[in-house]
Length: 166
Image 1: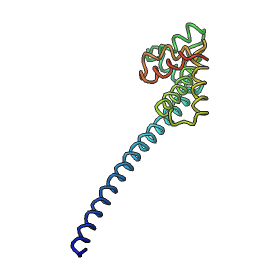
Image 2 (image 1 turned 120 degrees about the vertical axis):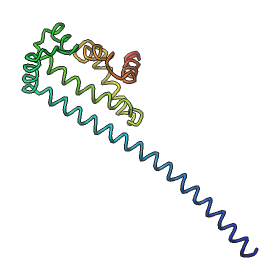
Image 3 (image 1 turned 180 degrees about the horizontal axis):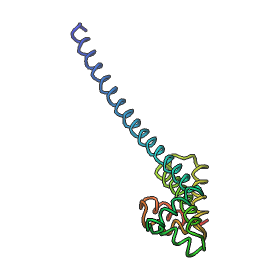
Image 4 (image 1 turned 180 degrees about the vertical axis):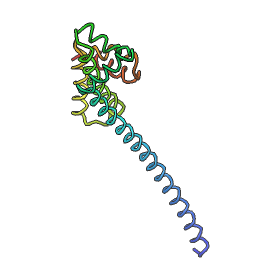
């Protein structure tokens, strides 16, 4: 074998190594993009949940309701339903609404990533959804009132869970 043949083999091996490296980098870039999206979604969900929980604070609710009434703001469908069906005051119904909205934000944030949960965590998550939305109560009223106004994938996931036995 002469030096030219060795040089050609070296170039071919070098080219193969470059393609393998580019393929590896493409896979890493895809994973990094997925992780970035997941982190952004997590951050957004955490922020919204915190804001909803703060909005549901008794003092904040009282102030918001007072301002809303003075400005002619009509209560949301959930607040109206809680006032009519549960006999709550507007302030009380608004507090319950914000708490349910914080829970809803948590659940809808988890649904896109539910397949990544450990099976025990997934069973716990799914069981909690069945537990609060399957039986009559505040959470079910919230869900039934809000489901036409929310993302269809979340509604489909929950409806499929509710349709399962147990």
